[in-house]
Length: 125
Image 1 (cartoon, helix red, strand yellow):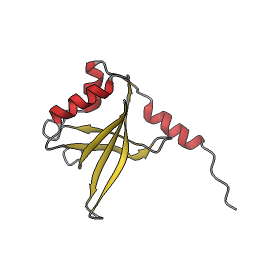
Image 2: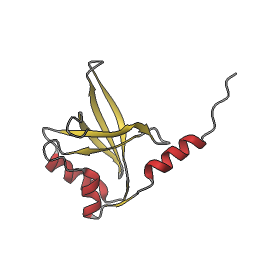
Image 3: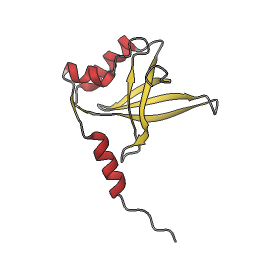
Image 4: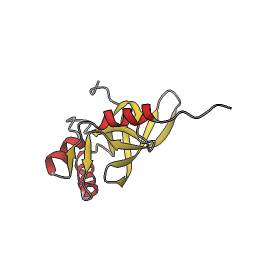
């Protein structure tokens, strides 16, 4: 549910499609820092500035809502997801597409799952 999405802090933009995110885990009373790959978009090189601009306008006391795809990770170990404005629920990925900084990537999740299923399992000695 988007209405009860947890909040996180974006620490930095590490690549045009990757954010370093800090998330508070209430069950552990600790923070977790991880890389978030924006789901469903193929970002252009100039997307970094667009992301920074969006965060400046939409982050509420440096907090944004975190939406993940069941914490699925891509082949680089990045969590797939998106961030939203806490109040208006505006999506970063939708903004990037509308501004021309990214193009839709409809099969993103499917390609990640295909890679995951086709990866060889390690042999157990």
